[in-house]
Amino acid sequence: MMVVFMAAALFLSFQTESKAASVTNKDVILVLDTSLSMIGYQGKNIMDDVKKSVYTYIDSLQDGDRVTFVTFDEDLKIYPQVVIDDQNDRDIVKKYISVTEAKGQWTYTLKMLQTVFGIADTLTKENQGQTKVNPRNVVIVIMTDGLDDPPPAKSKERFDLKKIAEQYSGNDWWIYLVNLAEMEKSKEISAAQQKLKAELSKISENTTFIDGQNPDKAINEDLQRDIEQKEWSQFKKILPFIILVLLLILIIALVIIKRASGVKVKGSLDYWNHDLLKPEVLNVSLTALSMKSIPVGRAVMTGVRIRDFESRNVLTLKAVREKGVIRIKVIPDEGLEFGFKNKDFDGYVNEGDIFSASNFSFRYNA
Image (cartoon, rainbow, N blue to C red; front, side, top):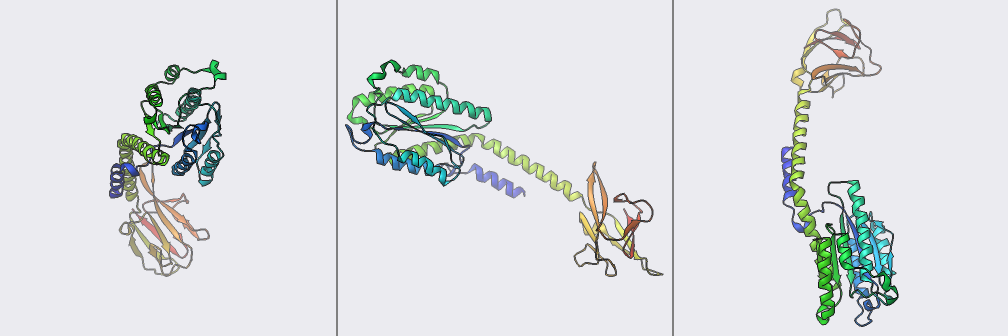
């Protein structure tokens, strides 16, 4: 048993990063830009490629993860949260994504950030309320190709990026901005993205910008690799605790085994056929049998086999630990003619007790 536990500990400690199991499930917030630029307005049509890439990502999520899908242009749409338990749940999220169309005239990025961070904050508080140890990781994946370009009609609703950062600063959310624009072709986009990255980093140090010109590589290689590395880092932090728990389990198991190994029927048993005038008294060492429970009867598989035992029923002697003392219980099968000769039946046999079962009498010697 010790070998098994130590092997388990070593197996856990030498898991590779690529195969490391996540420490806990995730709350994933997937955010997709649905402005016209995603289908070719002032650029190329990347919407279908992005959708296919996200489908693959959905299939990679673990059972127990929760997904909230959000779309944004000049408005936002928040789809119902889906708890991933099976393929059907994954298909529900894919369905949400498949019916999404890029029709928005504007890209209201700051309003989206304010809303999405509000969702993340609610999830964080909910998770911390459920458990203080290893709460769910909140993963925010924002897929967009544009700048903050709010509709003029909503100028009074303008959001301030610095204020948003101050409101949610200090969180440890895993924020990924998958930049679908070709930044090198636009200094304006590049500068705006750098400013956005600086402010988002104030919200969480775990903010990562990913070049999304190849959406599948960005989402299913770069993003996945970064998440696995973060999960592996978390796992390594609790690995000493896991090993300690395994060692405690091992110690407890050894104590139980040791205690159980000492609970055995000891002593000897004299027995004779009391139906005979001059029966031969036989003796068997119960200690030598080294058993916790010893059946006595005529069957081949009994611990003490008595060929002339008339009843087909069995009498069992069983060692039990009670208040630190090992006692011998006597358990007759239902229908077995049984009784003590020197005392009333109390369920236990002690030194010198004489009892009868079927056509035999017995004397227990401790």
